[in-house]
Length: 177
Image 1 (cartoon, helix red, strand yellow):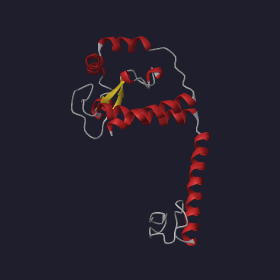
Image 2 (cartoon, one colour):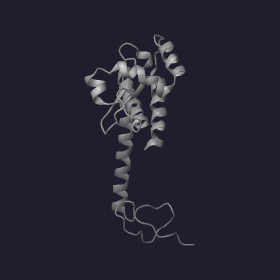
Image 3 (cartoon, one colour):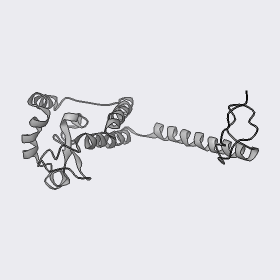
Image 4 (tube, one colour):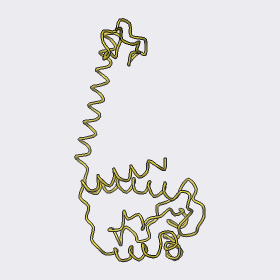
C-alpha cells in the first residue's frame, strides 16, 4: 500500500516518492533546514529552562502577580468597579482590599482582590470606604469575616508552590478567554 500524499514541512511542496509514512521533507536541502530548525527549537527550550532555574523568589512572585492579576481582570471584567460600581473599561486594575504591603499573606487571596477602575485604585488610593461597603455584597458576609480572620497569619510560599499557583491561575484564566 502506497503512503498518502503529504506536503513537505519546510517548502510545502508535495513529497514525491515517499519512502515511508514518517518522511516529513522532500529533499536533502529541506532535511538540513528541518534539522537546523529543530536544533534551534531545542536550544530555545533549553535557554528557557536555564533562565527559569536562575530566577529568584521575588522574580517568581512578580510572575505570579501578573498571572493572578490577569485572572482577576478576566473574572471581574463584567462586574463593574468594586468601589464605585462604574463599568470597567479595557484598562482597569486588580485592587487589593488589604494592601500587599500591610498584608502580604492575602496578596493572592481571591476574596481580597477585585476589579477596580484606575481612578479608584490609583487616584483615590483604593477608595477603601466604598470598597468596605461593597465587598460584603460581592463575596458575602461570611467570606468577608474570614478575610479579616486570615489577616496577620504568616504565609511564606516556596518557589515550587509559586510555580504551582502560576499553573493553577493560568488554567483558571482559560475559560474566560
